[in-house]
Image (tube, rainbow, N blue to C red):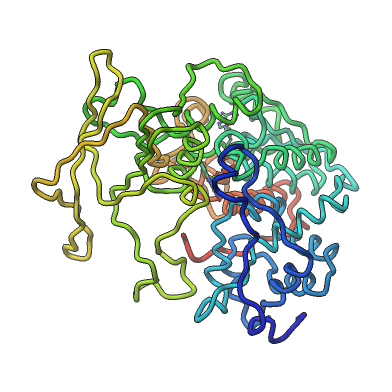
Length: 486
Ligand SMILES: Cc1cc2nc3c(=O)[nH]c(=O)nc-3n(C[C@H](O)[C@H](O)[C@H](O)COP(=O)(O)OP(=O)(O)OC[C@H]3O[C@@H](n4cnc5c(N)ncnc54)[C@H](O)[C@@H]3O)c2cc1C
């Protein structure tokens, strides 16, 4: 431990974000950086407490006290080794993870937690800058072939682990870009795509093959896949968006968040647009859904110079502090703001959208809404409309950011005759094996819509299970069972 009383000497300090009025003029990363002194001080706030709850709070089981200790000593090179021992892509989680580790940090019982996520980001950025992250080619090959379907964080983590175990790995991606939601969904200002591409380059140099523009199930017959590969890992994500089936849904100007966000990412890549441009410029924008995807739409609409933006949510606004039934170290169900909320727009809660109104040309013009309240009835919260609380919100662009229900069943999954769980995700046993012997699954396709950190953890775990399936044993590290869902 660098300083046994560091937590008493230094206050929590995160990496400063660029000024919000300035950063909305571009799409670049919102963060600046820490000085060496600040990194050392912040890491020395880690108390090295007897039972590191942070380590258990992290779905990857990151060795947090150990890397904090190494950073406080200035041993950055060893810190990245420690970080990589549990996490293939700490430069992603160091930027966009909601940091359940920090929620579980012992310091946060009565003070502010260690800035674990920003320390993780700094370790990884330092390692890339110094050329310490290099391709790690396997020392031997097993001659087993594995197909990974989907190149999101789950598929990428599984691919890197399995390749390092010596198997030949091909990742199939139906999109023209690799990275899943890291590349096509999450906005550039949260995760610059050069950061994703740098990691993919490393993976290519390690020997992993990527086949883009290949929709498995259409471009490759499921039966051919089963014939050709020794094991298959399905990591296709949760892609069916939750819709709002109300009057006027078909009007022009109403879009799913992912159609909007993926188009902006595509514009920034310099691609030629196939679909009509969805542009918030000069418009009144309403975002339906109070979550992170909604916040990403907000930051994107701000950068596109929208006239006015409101993000609405059907649920009540969460409390500022933890409720009694939500104690540490559980994930705090409290009011949170993302970087986009610092930049502009409004948020409103307890709002139910009843229907859309259009102009004579079928362009959306308004949302008709009503305020609701949530009443506890026999241990369940029931939504009730408040009488005479109807109101309208003007909108020329409506973005539906209500999450995803399940992976796409039509095509590959149905053709393979896979079983689903009661939420429509691909069902698998504890070894992440589906009802078909050599087909495994991980990430959002198996768990349902979740987080990048869970996707990486799931990909790593699936890789180990596949390795054991093929070789009877595995030297790949196991991933701890994550016990607290968030
Ligand atoms: C807008 C948005 C913002 C988000 N922001 C955050 C955030 O800030 N922090 C966070 O932790 N999480 C965030 N998430 C959630 C996170 O991105 C996902 O949980 C994570 O990407 C899931 O990883 P995955 O690998 O399981 O699937 P995905 O990332 O969805 O990747 C699946 C890939 O499989 C491909 N695919 C599917 N079917 C086939 C097929 N038949 N053939 C070939 N390819 C196929 C898809 O094209 C896709 O590229 C966000 C999600 C969204 C939508």
